[in-house]
Length: 156
Image (tube, rainbow, N blue to C red; front, side, top):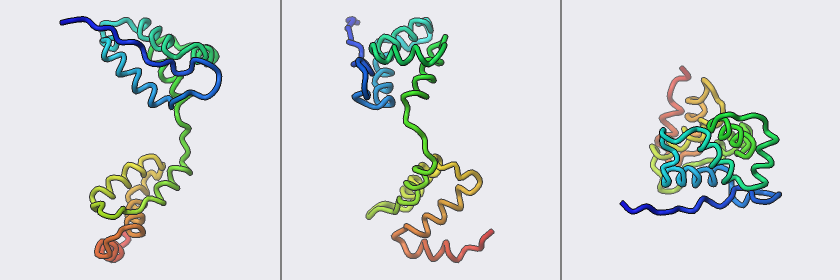
């Protein structure tokens, strides 16, 4: 098999300022690079994976990383970078999105319920998850028959 050389991804943060793309998108591309170059195999030393990731961060990314504390393993580095650069999670925002999500024209009930489940997973509803999905379905479905049936169910 012919060997090919794949250039590393564009540095995540080459200079001060905001990254050009989100951490999640960049890291997804980085993982593809690691797979394509076989650097993600178990045979590759953890220290090498760590060094490749840090190299690909770019100069400013490396500077920020150095301020985040000690990370001896590749997984530690990824976790620390994810925590620093990853999206901030807001339960309030996720609940707002959940409550705004109505059934779209032409969307099946099963697809709508699946989407509600995905949104609810980010909302920390705990034991109330099923009830919240039911209430959202009652409120935002385009199918009156389903709404009526759910409204006729006993509270238990």
